Amino acid sequence: MGKTAIVLGASGLTGSYLLKKLIKDESFDSIKLFSRNTLKGLPEKVKQYTGDLLKLDAFAADFTGDVVFCCIGTTAKKTPNKDLYKAIDYGIPVAAAQLCKRNNIPTFLVISAMGADKDSRVFYNSVKGEMEAAVIQQKLKHTIVFRPSLIDGPRHEKRFLESVGLIVLKGLQPLFIGGLKKYKIIHAEHIAQALLEASKGPSKGVEIIESHNIKELANK
Image (tube, rainbow, N blue to C red; front, side):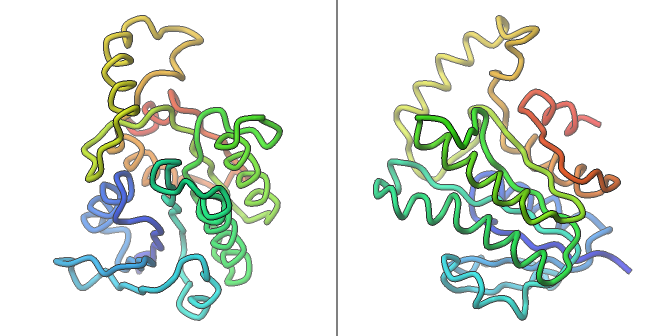
């Protein structure tokens, strides 16, 4: 019998790639999406639960499965209010990890960011670091934290500064060798593939996967 995957953030850049891969993957016979809006044109193996993810506990009865993929994330441009920003980037992943513990879901994978550090003076980095610490504190059987660098891929919304950064960094990619490898741009599809590969691996307690290792994992 196949496994059940739970996906948070399936409409986002990385989450959408992951959803396509999960649909094709025969080791998963059921996929549960928790989101604000319904996605169209999905096969029967995908079940959708819509509502306010800031109140994730409301989904507790249906939040059951074998592995949770948390691809939730916002930006300062989309969410300038810092309280709301933290409620999304910290609150939703931590609530999801808590539901994993409550409902005995063994494997939890979450996308964080390179530079995550709860003691950082940079708000974005500190939120990601605090999120990681709170998720790990749940002491699940298998927690896997991904720390990608700048993510490349087709986005629905325009992010001017990020687009400029991508153009500049793409020209510098050949220079990122040795200790600089972790700063290389990584495509969202590589992250999605790595998430899928990592979910099938043996339980190792807590794993932190840095950006350059994400691509290596995706290419296995």
